[in-house]
Image (cartoon, rainbow, N blue to C red; front, side, top):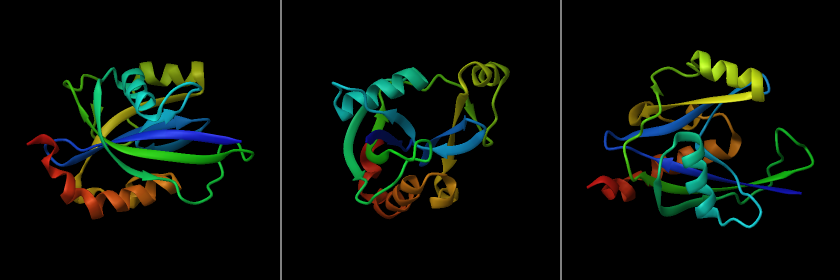
Length: 160
């Protein structure tokens, strides 16, 4: 069984990278924003939907960055193979969700979400000079973080 995930790389005008800090099933993960592809949905529509659901943020998908090219078993369901697709995105409006400055800084509402749903998330920007593959938790995200650092100079014109 395949589990297709779609993620957005958002780098703001201050050259900071957006990440999601998540508490899922008792474990902490820092990852890129996005989520699972639903039946009947294209990857770009999925990414736009995920940003709207998670951050109430309309985004434009600007270019493809990476698609998984190796076998990755799901950490949550060993019977599933993960295929992740990453795109660069830019916001079409101001970000209005609370942005944190420290990892896993959940507020009371987010902690009650965890009790209700078994997961919660919050968002923050990581300064470019502090951003490395160690900034994210998942194996595919680590590869993408290295690619971003290598290729970002090609995409600096997003906000100009």
